[in-house]
Length: 235
Image (cartoon, rainbow, N blue to C red; front, side, top):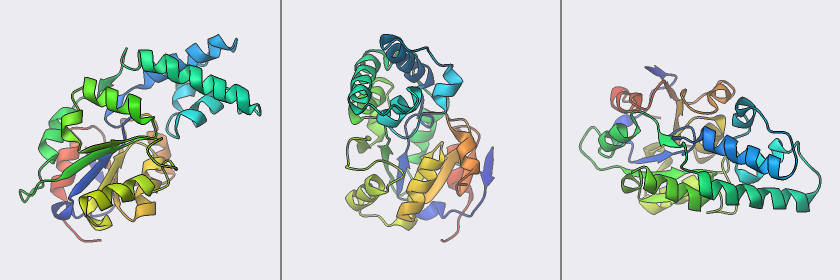
């Protein structure tokens, strides 16, 4: 189901930028297992998946920091991040899968309702290496002209640097750009670039969309098609 909070000019959208975790793929189990692998390595008690899931969305360093209880020891934190990344690189595809409807919707959305081709990209706070590997393994890569990660720029979402870079690369305006994600981090990223934003209620952090509402909400990835063909207006 599609829930419209604001009319979106779907006819003029030329750039669709997707978050990865909680939007295109369900990576929760592999992320949680990797965090608990890191905790066990450092003789810490494992955490419930639901707790770890609430820490996802602001990049690896923040995820590890939260899981460790915000330690003051910078050296220890760095070691923990390194171990997590090494573990996650080996296990990133153990359980991760594309959400139902993602591939079908990407195929449909690569062309606007008026027949004009759209550019599509990924902007995630996950490191770019694992992000690219996951997209490649799950058959998502052919749909995206660019996959940017949390280490592709000097700042991460919700800073708009990555989204602005994608707009510049495709020579489109904010009014022609839509960010699609499952958390208020994605909403704020879009707002900081003056772009449109669609929220996914099926993701890892949909509760945060109540804090910073998007322009449109959907229940499943299948609903992306209806959402981007239904409402036509101007900003």
